[in-house]
Image 1 (tube, helix red, strand yellow):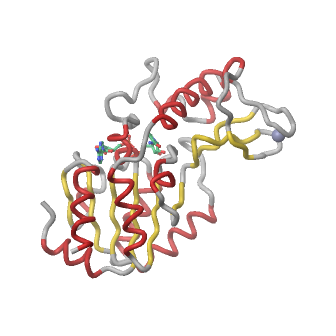
Image 2 (image 1 turned 45 degrees about the horizontal axis):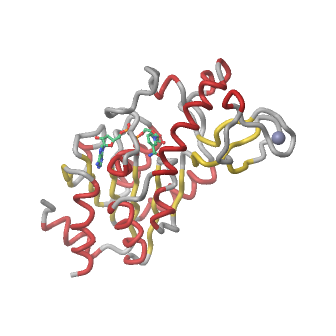
Length: 243
Ligand code: NAD
Ligand code: ZN
């Protein structure tokens, strides 16, 4: 299933980066945006996770986020999340970059982690920009208000069309400029920044491995595409590292 060349690379590497997307949490029961179960009340994620959608109907967007947050809260990390947390201890230099907002990586024990799209358990005030945890309670009309200034707040998430935290991106590009391996797991490659991060690492000489049951927009550029579910493939990597 995994080629001998990739096995050797995984065993010999010192500095690696793992890049994850919604697919790694699919086996935890969290729907991906583009897979089955990605629709909510007939809305596409692209029509809800945008600044425009929030301006038009903050109550609807919040209702969707409360629904999604509840799914994340009740889900548990799967084997793939745990193997990645283990890999962090194995390699002398390690960074996990995730597009996921579900909090399952930190719950599995990952520490060297950058959540580039934010975290679904936090909100941000539109006025004073305070970032605060969302409480587990019923919010009238689903709306969340700032604990400091009582203004309307929004999910602390990077939405479609919004810019990323520049400091975080600089840290990622600097780290991935001289890594041995990049592993891309469960991402469709429809969002451009994660694709750029992967391609940049590849162009700078990183050996690239992708794990996904389906091909993505990056698959043609990787050294090895491993077709399969994250929760099934990653345990064999873990076993390999222990040999
Ligand atoms: P996506 O929904 O566009 O694509 C998911 C990818 O995962 C697909 O390529 C699919 O083939 C693959 N996949 C499905 N099951 C898999 C499995 N068991 N193992 C490995 N791969 C599997 O997701 P995306 O590319 O990450 O981007 C969409 C955006 O959606 C991201 O910005 C992310 O922030 C957000 N999102 C996050 C979550 C989450 O936090 N869990 C869930 C949905 C969407
Ligand atoms: Zn405020």
